[in-house]
Length: 223
Image 1 (cartoon, rainbow, N blue to C red):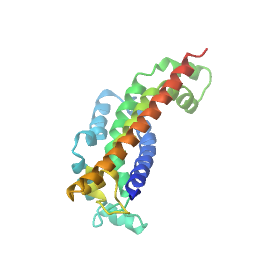
Image 2: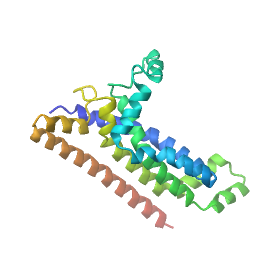
Image 3: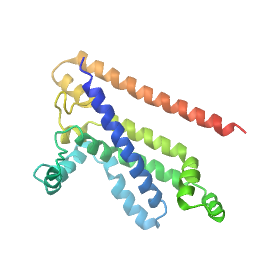
Image 4: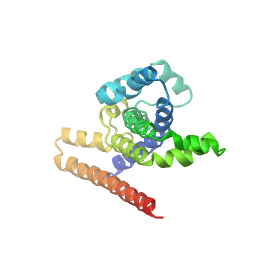
């Protein structure tokens, strides 16, 4: 059994999750502090990929990064090609998973008690210190939930991924595209094996998150 689709799916989901983590926190933090009208317009823009069909997201990525498009030509000058390459899958996974991280993190930041930040400022603490040592620990449950959702969404992404990078065994194949290709070629047994692999990986991720949350709750209860 060729395990490349599993390895490729994990690295695409992992890299995109790291990018989504920082980008989502940055966008959510500043969006939560914007006026209502501006926040509403920004929300529409940043969460639109969550309601669009994944194939539509993939189509827009092709319009942006296609080999004959301005951005695609510009990236090609630096030796970067997102179409039909495994790292193009990172762009697809980032686009479809970003709204989950953004919305969850924004909700966590909006529920944060700003008096804690004001108290830190009166003690002479910097904004950076307050953000990482006060705001983030208080909002960690929402941040963690958004990160897990983003990783899971990236791991199971099919529509945008298949549009942008296609399916090439040993190069761009992911679990989702492999399942579809095996099913399309009437290899039901092979497709079922990869479905079970995907279920096992997803269950392991959720189990690890549950254990982490339990440890954090236990630490919070300690005097």
